[in-house]
Image 1 (cartoon, one colour):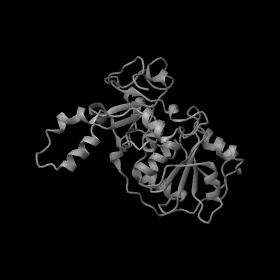
Image 2 (cartoon, helix red, strand yellow):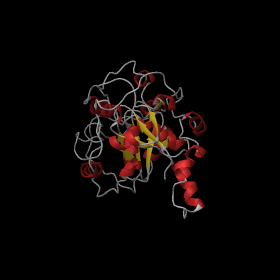
Image 3 (spheres, helix red, strand yellow):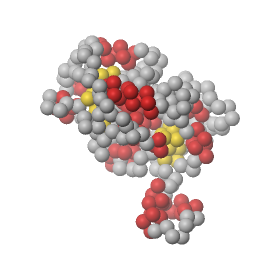
Length: 311
């Protein structure tokens, strides 16, 4: 699997090469659905295409995708059509970027392409467009020529995300990527109720970045990210497995249980936390796509408020 980050200098060099990557600009403003495309038209990395959070990276609610909330996943067929329209194919590297260090919404695009659709060569521009500007990278305006379409049909892995009922019953560690004040329930600017899913810990995705807006080192991330229970705390339920289980199988189960599920407001910034886990060399969390926007919209679901209980 390709290392999931690329720096601005390496991107510029790659764009000048014989086989340039496909660059997808994922900028978004959550309070203005048209702003991302407008920003892209005003100025973008040469040759890049716009990938829209609402139109391309989300589907309509209750459309059978298995996810809900403000930004549910599109179903397989329409997302496949989007990728084909943009010319995405496994033999060509894809670079995703935004102007928020990957938080809005490049990390969501990385997750959907790499983790869900199984594209083998997806990287996120570390530092985003600020890093591109910092190396005096070239800019292009307008929409340009449409890309040549591809014929790629992804093999989607729906095990990489969880739906509402599984989230409610799961023993996995739940990690909330929203800002601390939203986690604690002090403010709630978007969703029906304030607070967080009971038992969840808080890891604001902004903490994944250093003062320059780039991802922290793998070592720093590994120290900081909330991790699942130690192996010895999961041994009791695992002892109920069949006796013929091999030592290798038992060791694998101990490493995988109970695991981590990442969530946020609507399954967007949680992908930033998932990418941080990948960079840290830790087991990759699953994504609760519906996140707090879905959970809080169901009045029968409990909510907690109060201080964050994780770094």
